[in-house]
Length: 174
Image: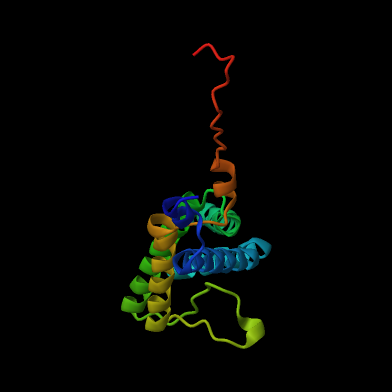
């Protein structure tokens, strides 16, 4: 194995950071999705509180968003379609950030409704800290889409092609 092959197959600090970001973001969205899927009407009411989606589309979005979070988050954890999953989560995060900023500018006092942290006694009030936190999440999602270097991913296992270099035999016609 030459140095170039060894470098391509190594698992260094950069690959570790990519894996950690991918797993953290995936777990975060899977966790966020569960409460919304289990209590769909509650999420529907929370979505209405933001007042940014047309009323006619609120029922559709209240069903699609949690399932998109769950599926994309799960795929991100597994490393299956990780770039596409990251792109879906990036789009959701940008939309969430827009909703957060619009409501902060409006001066609306409300809960974020991002994660159910009641059992920890943690407030989820909508603040500028929430907006900054989501910018960090946006950067994490962007890393999975544009800069990720996965080494431990189902996509990598499925995309590996074994190439055999056969020695020409004496009996070969070529």
